[in-house]
Length: 96
View 1 (cartoon, rainbow, N blue to C red):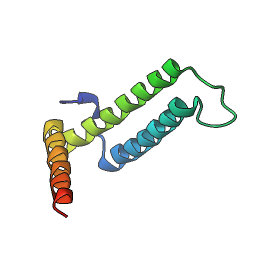
View 2: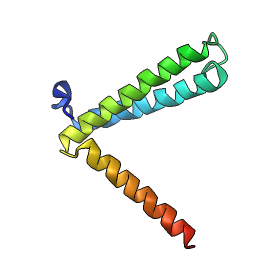
View 3: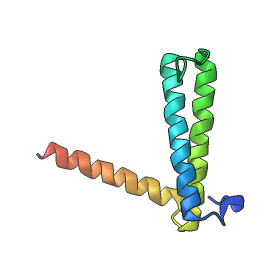
View 4: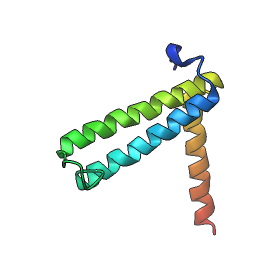
C-alpha cells in the first residue's frame, strides 16, 4: 500500500502523529464504553461513538502506512510477523 502524500514525512513526525492518533483511539474507546470521554462532555450515542472510533482507527492505519512506506515494509509483512510472534507466544505458553 502506498500513501503518496505521506512519502516525505520524517520518522519523528510520523511517529509523533501515530502516538497522538493512538491516544485518540483510547479516548474514542472510553467514549464508546461509557458514552463520553470526560465528565464535562455531552454523552454521545453508541453509533456516534462507534463512528468516532472507526475514524480514529483509520487515522492510526494511515500513520502506519506512512511508516511502512518510509521503511519499505509492506503491511502484509507486518501482519504476518505479528501473527507469527503471537502464535509462538501461545505455543510457548502451552508448554510451560
